Amino acid sequence: MKPLSYVQVRTAREAIEAFVAAGESARYIAGGTNLYDLMKLGIEKPAHLIDIAALDGANRIDTDGDRLFFGGAALMADVAEHPVVRDDYPVLAESLSKAASQQLRNMATVGGNLLQRTRCPYFRNGANGAYPCNKREPGSGCAAIGGMDRSQAVLGASAACNAVSPGDWPVALMAMDAAIELQGLDGPRVIPIAELYRPPSRTPHLEFTIGREEIVTGISVPKTAAGRNSTYLKVRDRESYAFALVSAAVALEMDGDRVRQAHVALGGVATVPWRARPAEALLRGETLDRERALEAARAAFAEARAGRHNAFKIELGARTLADAIINAGSKSQ
Image (cartoon, rainbow, N blue to C red; front, side, top):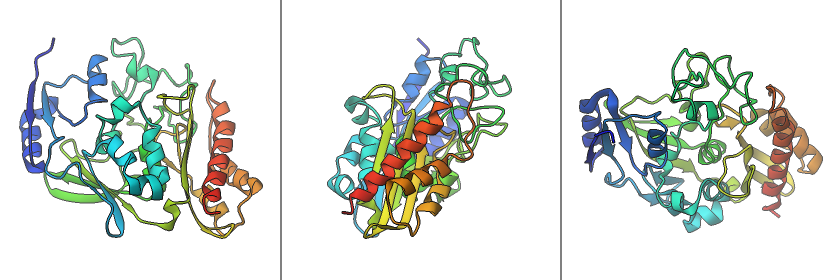
């Protein structure tokens, strides 16, 4: 057993002050489903835990006004089962319901889900030094490059890392142009979700753009007609409770059978939640059919680069995205 301190706080300011006072060995905890996992693996070794699950208003879900708002500590299950989210924004509900078991969704928070660490097997199984990993030990190398890379990224990889971004919820939020509300030492700020994640480049251990002491206090999603014509399609090795080999979040603004505007993001294939702008451009203004959907989907993977064992992800990804596009479009009929 490793001794550690624990404190529960009620305000963001109190949490930040406790975090800064505790120093480098401090970690925030809300649901804890990712942190406890990493602690058992010896990757995370905190000495001080600051519990932010009970921050004032942190579990709020607000569907009034022109945006949806989810407090950072709102539970995945509560958001997925909210009637407005479920009925009017299926891409959001589906990404959460397909992300984990019911037990985990009852504990895990939507803010914490944005910041979960990679599931790369070399990252998770190399804490004893068996495998080099630049995310775990900066500068040590990457055993996945040239190694067993079936689950690794085909988009956004660098010479230092090809680990896949693990989440489902962030992919749906990327497609829906969500904004992330943060609280830090300098006060609150808001950033587009696209600015939350860092590509690996030469420093893959720097995964997020937020400060160490900053807290995800909320997530806002603009209300749009594309919400109803949306879907999250996930392909995995087993039907339940597995991370994506490929996933696609699609939301379409339709004018009859013609696409007025497309919102497309990919998961399971990239080092960050991946916005598929080429696919969006090819769909815009076009009549939706299988041929056009597959053309747009292949454009999304035009810059994909395969390793030794993951080339199948490129074709699988294109076909999965094409299916998601057709599924989203069919909801307008």
